[in-house]
Image: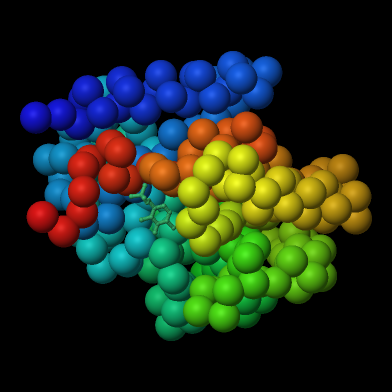
Length: 231
Ligand SMILES: *Cc1c(COP(=O)(O)O)cnc(C)c1O
């Protein structure tokens, strides 16, 4: 039986190999443990292996776990779909939101982030394969929205997030990730120095190696850390 601990060792080796192949330092890539559907005990086990950043998709479920684990010093990232009537909870409980898919969501998070907390880190979710069923800004919309969002108070616009459609080979997987990297560069060419984006949240269990080769700074890994979901 693979344990969470063993899985994390394997993932860290994979991460180091991909970083070294790309000529990057492994420290430049944050391993975000996606803990949706996992309980606090499983999260604690990952914490014992040294992981401190966790990604959650469902607010209610996440807040229960954040409260249960409040004695620990974990960094919580919201990565799921965010309805505008739920933004306050995201603004109060998380240090990152990766799934900003409309200007209005960013405006609400900015207005609702408590000023006593550090600015909330945001990524714009980009529908990089233009899939009709997926949420996210189109690349063109992201280019326009980024300038406006970057100037909002109480938030730091950090970068872009994408979930490409699945592809079979690493060569194919790299294509949408390279497009996301180019979009970040294009956005940065329009932003003031103090506002430049430094984050590419891309790569999951099945394609994290390709994402790291294309410059991912955060990989979001669930299955390959905690095992298959829904069992
Ligand atoms: C569930 C999820 C992941 C993790 O996916 P795995 O294939 O289990 O690694 C990453 N990102 C988002 C946005 C997710 O919803």
